[in-house]
Figure 1: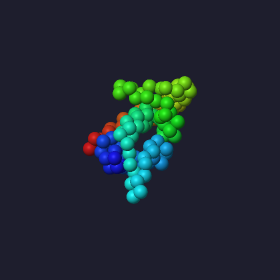
Figure 2 (figure 1 turned 135 degrees about the vertical axis):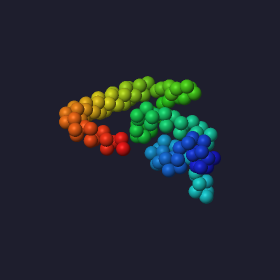
Figure 3 (figure 1 turned 90 degrees about the vertical axis):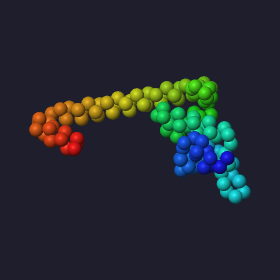
Length: 129
């Protein structure tokens, strides 16, 4: 199938599919005409990529973990022993980022709460209309 068909079937834009190829996540064959030729399994690969991106992994990490995952239809299952350690490290990285963001939000909340009542009223009025 050509890239437009893969895009239609996965809901992923052509430009992202090309990016996935550039990152080594997809490996289409090339026709003599230069067109990319994808196989049926690539539909599932793209879905796995999207799931891993939604889980907070970047494409560099996905490149290393993708070969060690099996899709049961309900979930992705690790199949390589080393993969679990990598996934734990990624989860820890995400947890640290969330904690940092929560700290930032808390600091902003304290600044916002310190605003005088008249300033807060004007700000709310400008936000609502």
